[in-house]
Length: 223
Image (cartoon, rainbow, N blue to C red; front, side):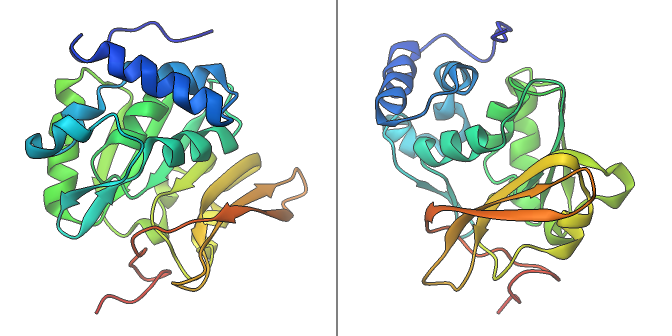
């Protein structure tokens, strides 16, 4: 069932619907994901100076050297998690809060980790202002996950690391999926990992991509 809870303001609803329609035409098939894209006010989760570009299918800078992913990327990663609505999801890299806001429409609970204090505080405020109540934002090293709240039914990583962090794999529940960008800096691939009921993992490459670096103990080292 599509979540019909109100979210944010009503302005720019037509551009959101048009964006959702474009994503459907480009190959996104999960109607729940498309409806979330149509309802989440992306313009309220980016710097005010860029709000005129909010419903273009493009990544945008959000400050501190970080970006908000293009809606098509967010939609593809969300769809790849194969969510049914009852999950607790771990998000590594809160950023603007857009991915978390999308997930909030689709799952029971989102646990999000952001390493940059300014972004974590901004995302918390933005999500609160949108009335999102099932997302909690923590400040910390996302590559270590959140062991105290594991296991997670699904995990999404929104920055590119050299390899899938082992702590995240260990915090993925049997039957769950982890999706994120991994590999050499110039040859990142969007990867989907699945943990089966025996605790074993399978790996699938979903296509080339380009993300900001995943920094942390189990990611790239900070300069």
